[in-house]
Length: 141
Length: 69
Image 1 (cartoon, chains in turn yellow, green):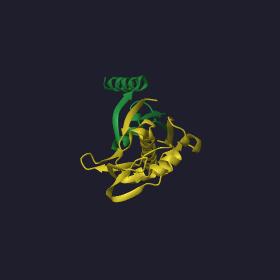
Image 2 (image 1 turned 60 degrees about the vertical axis):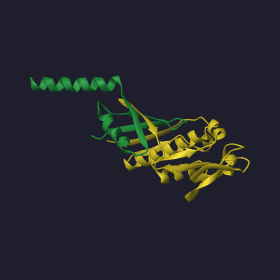
Image 3 (image 1 turned 180 degrees about the vertical axis):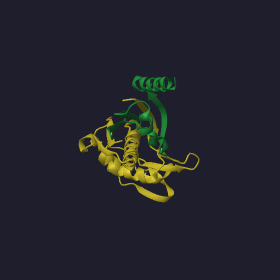
């Protein structure tokens, strides 16, 4: 080993975002115009988003009393901002989504550089919180 | 002759990423990882060289100087 990089990930690519959400088992709703998010009591929240993971999907996979989680495009930063309730934030749902997004982006980049790609992720790990995903890319130079 | 290299990438539970390279010599690792700097969604916060890389750089400089004399 000769060097290493520390990298932060921001959500900019909608295709990678949708792919990452699918890898977590989510099938988000995508709207042309932002729509209101729903709270856990089915109440309409003031927050709006163009890409919404319905709370039922989050409840089924991770939690029991989630709210809708959304993504809204920020024209200033050219990034997708995640709109998430405090409850889901405490359960680190945003972290898991960012982790899945980073994995998608990195794997695509490695493949574009002709690396063979392996990862430690499997169904059992996917169900657990607070795991580190490890990807190994190999090639000859 | 071609040699095997690998990149080990760890993504923590908050989506922060750490990338290590194995199998390279000297500053080669920087070239191998340079594609990461061009990805729109990734912000490279820090590139940290290890003693191994610094040693190789010194050795290369030393060789060049020796050749000039």
